[in-house]
Amino acid sequence: MVTWAASAMAVAATRIVVTAPASHLDQFRAALAQVAADVAVIPGGEDRQSSVAAGVAHLVGSVPGSAPGSAPAPEVIVVHDAARPFAPAAVLGRALEALDGGQDGQHWDGVIPVIPVVDTMVALHEGVAYLDRAALGAVQTPQVFRAAALSDAHARAARDGVSATDDGSLLVHYGYRVTTCEGSLEARKITYPEDLDLSERRLA
Image 1 (cartoon, one colour):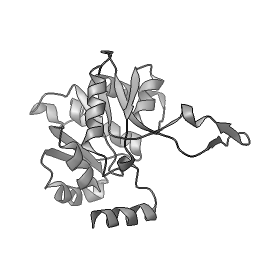
Image 2 (image 1 turned 180 degrees about the vertical axis):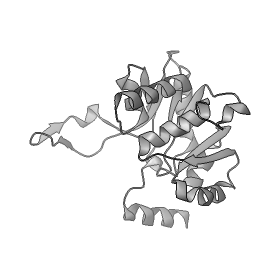
Image 3 (image 1 turned 180 degrees about the horizontal axis):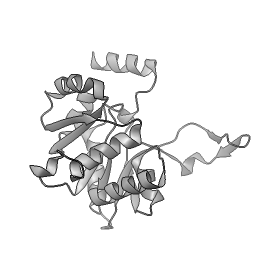
């Protein structure tokens, strides 16, 4: 899964940082050796947010041994989940285009791909409250951000004890401008054992 996800991002990325469990770094490096990009595998954190923060710190050069000693810090960072290994490169292209203003020329700090919600949705925190699905979207990756904004949001979240399920919501929490682009059904997240079975059949 991580090899497929990284290969999809290598279409546009010059450097890729993969966060992995510290006890499995060599296995990940071996799996990613075939990816046509400069790939670094580093230890992740205890959860998704801290793992992304570690990858961002590596890219912007705020940790020892990070990339800027040999390459400049990036202006744009893409965050992608290995659990979405079949995300089309076109989704990344749309996100990058939107970040640069797209047709309206607006400046954004981040872009998140979304797909329409097709199921009836309810909120469960106080009984059952039906939600207007026309006003909802399911968030996917790859998500694209200005490196300075993403780095700042993660640093402030670590300081403030703020947690989020994705990086777009973290930027929104700290007042950055985030917009959306069209996602893809192919970028669905592999979550359950049945999802793995479907993916194996697709690869076959």
